[in-house]
Image (cartoon, rainbow over all chains, first blue to last red; front, side):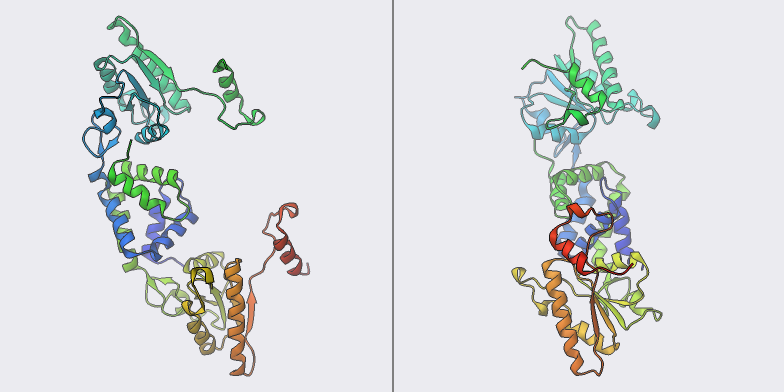
Length: 204
Length: 204
């Protein structure tokens, strides 16, 4: 039995969303078929207008309701401390932790030769310009702990440190801590993570 | 940091879909923010027009592109064998198995006194009318294996068997097999399931 066309199209669209397989797409589609008309209308409108209503901050390239996001506008933020992330949603995640009082910079990805993404495809020039403009003292590189994220971190380090020539003091470049996740069992950890955990040990 | 309003609304809508939590809603929303404009427009249109384009079959109450679904229209289907399910998506799931050559009847739920759903809220009258009209020989009750599904199965049995009075021969009412799922480990099975598995034993 084939699904009605409208339903089938919806299932195919939903399957393209991250983390949605055929079965969950079908469940969602049937939910939408049985829910109130107003819910579907508002959801459709929100999706259709999404890009019109959400701006990319012209400073840090995070998402915002306005041209400049609230983090970049906030004068109580420490602009000498900049946290570099791959994607705008990483900013939301770090902000949800609370406690970070610096600013952000969204690169727009990581260096990935296999996918033809080089340093020029990332917002590197903008990053270096902001490091100079704000007289940044520390760049925290919070790219993913993947091969691509690590390569990008090393590239950022070399670029930021080349600014030394122009400045009297160097800019500190740090990487987010690596090691075992909380609640982890030593016996199940992979060797690379365990080695990083040993290297990243701290006094208690 | 608060999410841009458009994004926040979308995350809240997506979280109401079955199986979608806050984190996956956020991932989906950011995916939609970064995907092509045409994808979002078509997805929005498909959701908005869903109920206009998908019909409920006036025979079995399953979903269809037309007023009568292809199962009910198919003259090769055995109309004396009717499979009763709670929801329209159950029909899709059973059809995807292949091999069932009867017809379906979607009840629209199960008896659930806590949620004030009684037999009158289900499509019982329509079921009994179809059983009589097609001179049905067997009603397979494929409601869920929950308390509500079981109660509904017993109710259907009593109602269908009361048709005996009007007919010379009775209608057989069967329930889908219960027992351990394939690949299950006896040691981890719950007692109720294990008991059902013993009762439902078959010769090999």
